[in-house]
Image (cartoon, rainbow, N blue to C red):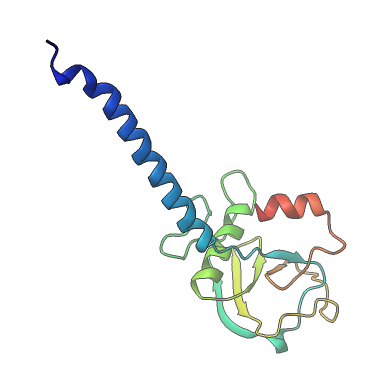
Length: 154
């Protein structure tokens, strides 16, 4: 007469499969109820009007931006490859931390954070002559390279 131990492995496999399926269904339904927040910032080709926005911060930190922002603040200079992408990322992190929706970035290490309650009108702003870039949640991708805009948003 065989003991019940030989039936245990298949029963455990079935039980684990059912438990894993129930867990996956629970996680999926939880994520479907609350989507992940996503608020992309886009390059504003025409600049913006400062009078329509509230100024939150103006920081200059030209140190190399090789380390990403710690606790919502980091340096804004060029990274070790000579590019300003890490500094832009740190500036965007700072904007999110201060609950802003627009940031102005200079590649040499300066970051301004703004909150534009009614959006910004890039058509009335003056294009930059000093190398600054205006990034905002209010700018659209009209007239820009849509593939590059989608890649940057993701």
